[in-house]
Amino acid sequence: MAQVRFAEVDIVVPDGQSLLDALEKAGQSIPSSCRSGLCHACLLRADEGEIPAQAQSPLSSRQKAQKLLLACQCYPTSSLRLSVPKEASRVKATLVDKVPLGRDILRVRFTSDVAWFPGQYTTLWRNDTEGRSFSIASHPERDGFLELHVRKRAGGVISDWLDNRLMPGQECLISQPRGQCFYTPECRFHPLLLVATGTGLSPIYGVLKEALDIGHTFPIYLYAAAGDPEGLYLVRELKELAHAFPQLHFRPVVRRQPEIGMLEGDVVDVVSSQHEDLKDWRVFLCGTPETVRKLQKKCFLQGASMSAIVADAFESPLNV
Ligand code: FES
Image 1 (cartoon, protein in one colour):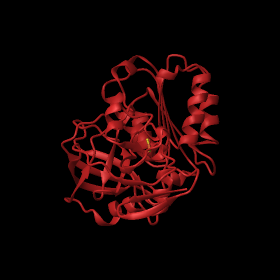
Image 2 (cartoon, rainbow, N blue to C red):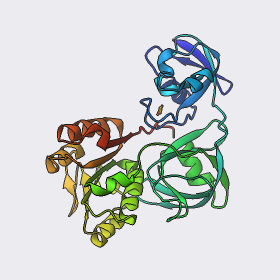
Image 3 (cartoon, rainbow, N blue to C red):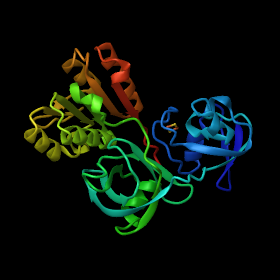
Image 4 (tube, rainbow, N blue to C red):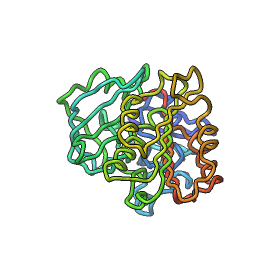
């Protein structure tokens, strides 16, 4: 085990536990998303101590020289003193409104001067050290605001702050949006397969609206999955879009108690049984890492090239 110091608190990291898990278990709110070294949301700086090589392997030489590390990839073996790197790129955002979208999903909308592509993610900062990454569902010009879908959690530091404390008109800081999950002009000439679990629908909704807005005419299949019908959201809006755009096929999928028009089962099985040939398709998969990994493999085996699959996996830590 190793001892680390973060935000003036001493924390023990047991052997085999990631620094990110240990900090969260100790009640610290660290920005995170993929938890697999891809998104770089969990970037921290080691002000003192030796950084395990694996915690820096996905980083640039410049980031390594700055003593940055990825908390989700860091398994410390000796003591470290850590801080959240100050980003010159944090900018102000003003909360416009917040609206419940379903049983436990909150839609929050901000105005801000940042630029983004629908489907990228940003980190929302409650203070200097507590932040959380969320994917963006809106378009900067066409919608004019930055829309995020937040799952409300009992005791969640960031979701509780958004739900109960940050009020319309108040400001906070956000990071420059990042990530590869967005519709590119090259997608325009291919059928699209979009699959979301939970709030993975946020980036998928952004990608979908971008595709429709720029006139995508090839078929688009969108699967939104949840445990039960109550866990789904934006169902009415997506049905209306499917009605208005015949190329869009919307398929809600639930594991139990399906309502009329819903498919029942595991979303991996449902999608793979309905799309046996994905050659030339463009695929966007957003949601929990396990489901995204399984879907990625299935889609590849069913003909999609790896370069045609965009996978945006994220975990939701319990205290967010
Ligand atoms: S790289 Fe650590 S959460 Fe994504």
